[in-house]
Image (cartoon, rainbow, N blue to C red; front, side):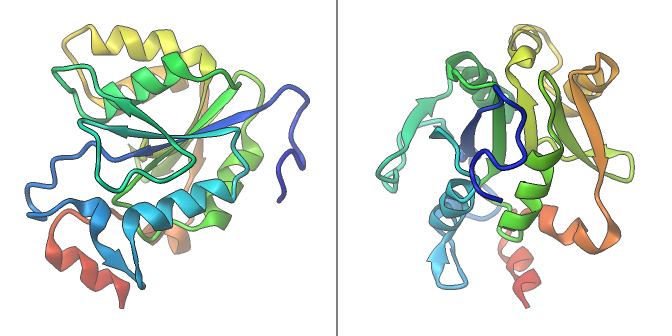
Length: 200
């Protein structure tokens, strides 16, 4: 699918690579892990570029040494609340109708899978992948209308994206998308060295 193909008039896309994790269990910056011959940050940025976004943002706690050319850095406001902080700031800054979010530590994700999510987004409504009863909020599409919901969650006491996205579904601001069994591995993340064995 090329940029704009099959999209409703007025639907535009910003992409954000979420790279603010502390990588404690991996003992190194997960973004720099080499996977199939290239660091994860480059693989994920290339994947996002294939969606044809108007802008690619990098969300992080501090400026990374690998910041790609042609992207814009957004730093979490301290104290960082993890992905919630990054998504909240991105939604506040973006000027498009939708945001596609992708975690840097989801190396098994594919361009086709992300294109499938974008293809079912609608005006004012995003797409939230679901595996069983659990949401996958770090590989999802959000409409700009959820910016206030994220800001409210960040200023509250419950920083869980599971709680927040459940409320967004109830409000009709995102629709759920059941991940087929054969696609579940796309949403796996790597948190410690042993997880890279999934590459085989």
